[in-house]
Image (cartoon, rainbow, N blue to C red; front, top):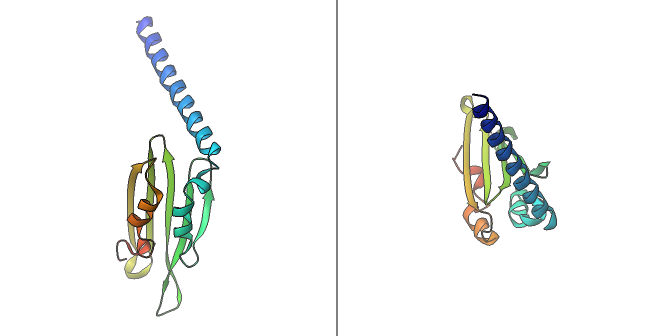
Amino acid sequence: MKWIVAIIVIIIAWVLVRFLLDLSKQTRAIESQGGIKTIYKLLIDGLLKYPNAEIIQDKKYFVTIGGVFFDPISCRTCGQWSVIIQPAFKILTVKYQAHIDLEGGKYAKQMWDFPINMNHLYLKEIFNFKSLPNLYKI
């Protein structure tokens, strides 16, 4: 019985060490290329073109960009949106979230995974920056 527990502990420790080594390798690779803001500059700059868009979080592992929706009738803010750009080993995850206060409040969420080495011009075409906050017509 003690052998089984010891083997399980060794396996868990091995998986944890491998994960930490891979995470460290990924962090070094991102830093060697100038960081997430440099690697995904085209994508980030496209998102920052929206009115009142700004970088909310700039961490080693992800960047969050967000902004607000305006009600053209009352000329006040009526919601907010955010996009999280997060490279994760061999994929790039992009998460979109939006909340509109009108009509009792509506939420929208979408997530995309792309190959980490995908052409950034192609990413820009996919997101068509003019329509991203209106993705769900909320």
